Length: 284
Image (tube, rainbow, N blue to C red; front, side):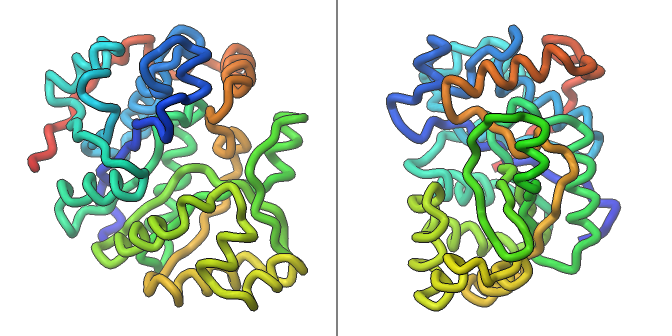
């Protein structure tokens, strides 16, 4: 990958279940359309990606086509070719694979989710610059759990506990070359266990790995090396210094949290409806 290349963003926007608590709380057809300070979450994510200046096109997997009228701004962007919409499949990993099939093999890809309501252009820029400089096939964004707790006392996030620290995922991944995309297949085997890290470690990496995990003997690099060996993909962790990168909207109470954060934050340099949505359509 050339360090000057821009990424194509692949955004997963379908609900995991038919009874999503965030969708229910917001009264919307799907979680991605939930209003956060008056703006649908998915629009916040799309605007942050564009404002980063490092994304050349966006592919959106989900929500189902029948739900799109529930977000007129998104429907407008799809209609104008600023976003390429694809129907989602029955799991995030399968949806990601479908999206990757519509992106040329030699194009670097950023994968994120529509519930990343606190995503900012600065987070995207930091993650993609660090990823581009990594000697790796794929990268994963992490944030230190202590930073999340310091910034958002009382919040509960899924935590990966290792010898050299506790980390939270950020729903940010890159596939820097075609080989890196093999990590999605590995992800497919693990996604049902994502909320139970000890089972994930054991079932995917073996009994010795789970013992090391439970005893907190593994470091982050050791864990990544084990994943790399098992998946056959060189992977690298990018530790993101922005605490909000570790907060997504999984629960109804997360809406209250992210709205309180956004109400205190400096407004982003684009308005409610976006300003310059000129991404080209990504041909299938």
